[in-house]
Image (cartoon, rainbow, N blue to C red):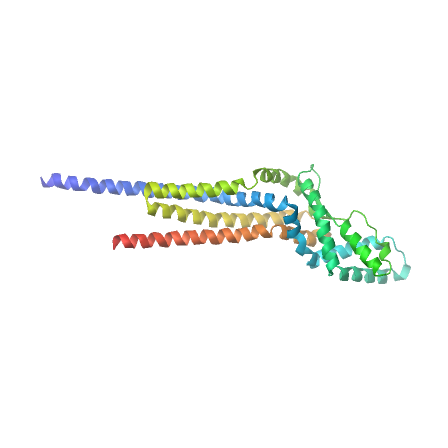
Length: 308
C-alpha cells in the first residue's frame, strides 16, 4: 500500500516537472525566434519607413537638409565652386590670386546670410526630384545635387551689392556627388524594394509582437507573457544595434567613392539625411531596454509573491 501511495504521489510531481520543462523549452524557443526575427525586422522596418517618409517626401527631405546651409563644409564647397567657375572667366595677370581670394571671401561671407539659406532650401526642393530619379535611374549614374540655383542666387545678390567681378560668375550645372556611380548601382535595387515595402514592415512587426505576447499570456499565463515581453525587449535592443551598424557601414561605403573635393559636403548631406535613422536607433534601444528590464523585474516580483 505504501508503495502504491508513493507511486501515486510521484506521478503528479513527475507530470508537473515534465510540463515545466516543456513550458521552459517552449519559452526558450520562442525567445530565440523573436530575437532572430527582430534583429532582421527592426532594421528592415526602419529603413523602409525612412525611404517612404523622408527620402521620397519632398517637404521632409528639404527639412532634413535645410540645416546644412549653416554647415561649414557646405558653405566652403559653394564658395569654392562659385569662385572656381568665376575665375575661369577672368584673366587679370599678376592680380589673379588677389582677385580670387577677394571673391572667395565675399562668397563665403554671403553663405552666412538668410538669402543663402533661402536659396539653399529652394535648390534642394528642386534637387529632390533629381535625387529620387537618380536612385531609380540607370546603371552607371551617380547621385548628385545641382548647386546651380544656389550659385544663381549668390550671383544675383553679389551683383546687387556691386561686388567687383560678381557678374563674371557663370550659372551652369554645378554638381556635388553624394553617391558615386558604382555604389549607386548597388543601392538602387535595395531602394526600390524599400520603397515598395513602405511602412508596412513596421506595421506588421508591431502586430506580430502584440499577437505573440497576447497568445503567450492567454495560453500559458502571465509569466509566459512576461517572458515573451522580455524577449521582445531584447530583440528591440539587438535590432537597434544592427540598424546602427548598417547606418555606419552604409555611410562609410557611400563616402568611399565620393571624389575628394566633394567628400566633406557629401558627408554632411548623408549625415543630415540619416539623422532620423540614428534617432530611431536610440528610441528603439530605449523602448527595448524598458521592456526587457520591466518584464524581468515583474516576473521576479511575481515569483516572490507566489512563493511568499
